[in-house]
Image (cartoon, rainbow, N blue to C red; front, side, top):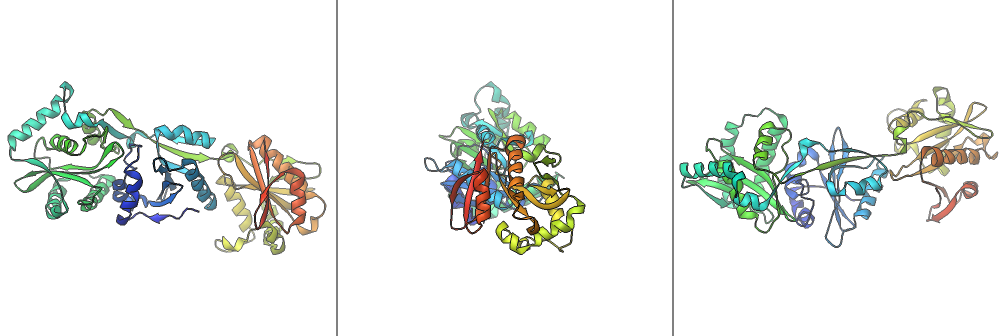
Length: 467
């Protein structure tokens, strides 16, 4: 199981092990963005199969994964994705990926048959050819050159220089003045300003590229970024607007200082800010870095209600309020549940009412996590068949349990076969699995009659059926 650790300032060296060689070109695949926005996204990281795996979290989206970042020649992407799947299954959530490089979209869609894909324009990164921003050559950049020439004419003593750790006081003085003229009311913009100021305290670290336009000891503009693969990712670009032409001068100077030998410069997204969008477009991006969001679904996504199934003696359908007493008795039978392999006490939330287990089953179906079939004989509930543990790749697990007074009549096997038939040939699964304890000889015989053995471990015999 993945061992996630919160991303902190001290995590930068571990992150850079992967990001320094990352080819995705997107700003989220950088140490700077992870540190800058960690209070917003609460990112955590783990390392597995030669890959960096980052899990972000928000109150309205839940857990959102970055696409794994492999070490060149070492990382196994599919194995890392398997680890993400296992973590999600353990925590009862569907795999969701928040910032997928466009070139990896097809891989995820092939892996997960049911997905919802989003490509929000607000968050696309602006990608420029490094040579373009380093030189501002040609007629198309005449506007930027004119602004730079005016700046140099007005402030001939102003010059670019790299920043070092010793510049902390000068950087703080810049922020104080910038705060005085900052006039945006947008909450996200205010957060960005606060986070950017904190990130500038990383100036002097080996992975940080930082520079400023300085005039007589005063900083007029500052930039901070890092190199990821063949891309210079610019996290911070701030200037005092009363110094006309300072922004294009800063953009060109920073690119010239740190873009040598690189192909791309990423100036990040505009977050829907009209002024930022206008400005970034004026610098003529060569490409837009799409950030694909992939939310996986399972075969239950299009199932509005639990269907009614019939076998020779039984019916299988949705649990109802009238079943509460019998269903409670089934769920509270410790002797039977020993073979079920689940102790409800571990996950009990709140008071154990008569309707508790029924409500859990109904909620699981509403959240598309499971289908709990009531197994009925002459209309009376005698057990349940549960389809659960969806792997979002066409597989799920099936289990069945019967009340003790109805045991020994083959009802469990009959209900299991009918639920399995529906799962594979009507719902559309292509792999169904099941397991039983070594000591549960009756379940073993039943599973052997309708599935093929698929190995064992110290605790269970495993079975599967594939179509």
